[in-house]
Image (cartoon, rainbow over all chains, first blue to last red):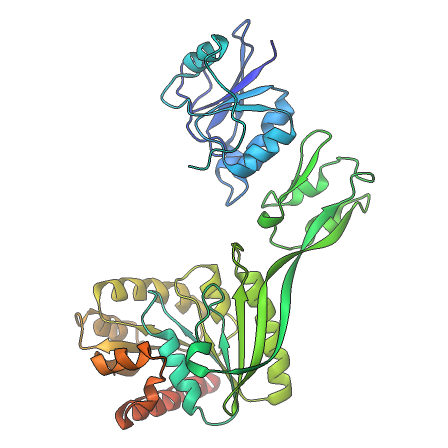
Length: 118
Length: 288
């Protein structure tokens, strides 16, 4: 199974899922089989006046993951992730990164077909 | 002389003041509506429009056959309007500010200029005076690029006719408001003595005072609210150029699309002295 990225408020599996995608503090990249993690800091996107979501999508695409688990992805970031072949699962805020990954592994997480304009 | 009529708070009477000044201005004048998100000066000046053009912004169009995905454009763009992800290049035209940087840095010349429609610029005459306005395309988020094009047209018109211009600026103190006043010789801040009016007036003063342009206040709906705004003006040595009374007859005239300087001799007098005060302010600054 290929790696997945979870928007996160911190670098570990026990940090909270950051509900924002583009302006997330960072991304915990997890290998779901081994639960080995890497951390991608997203500080540079957080301070951008605009385009944070696209910048974050670039980081994610470069990390070579197949899925992003997060709270909410904006329409432009969604388009970018979609073009890069990364699937998006939303509404996972309120969980820890570990819980989000477990939920993903148990097959309870659905990919979003379109950007969620809420 | 270019006079910008601005405000912090919206709905304080910028257009009312602009239209009235335009109606009795001595010498040639161009009335300019730079509140491109919702232009309304024409509703009062009833111009005869003689020209229009569609305004565009230059945006990147990528030739993927030539692109090597080096990422130079994406690295340069501060707005992420162009993004390279591996062997994938995406453009987000609506994010583009039109700086042209990506076209300049592309080593493969794989980017050519395309266009995003910003809106329309129209011009004509209103009585003996000139008229010019911009109207932003529905859905367009950025008004400064269109405003810059309207101002370029104003420069051309002024070069032909000479005389003065009066700009009806957008409300607020962010980029559009600053863009509307930055090339003016005098800034007239229209405000009202209500708590909201006073609060936003202070923001406007903070935003515009550093531009080091002659600045004066017009107090609309005088008689409402408190004296705080008068005290603030005294403290900051900000001249009060005119006061327009809080009067139902003015609201009624405005609602019918009338120019309020034309509804009573008193109001006409108010705007004649306002014009003189604005000229005085500009001259004072020129001699300082």
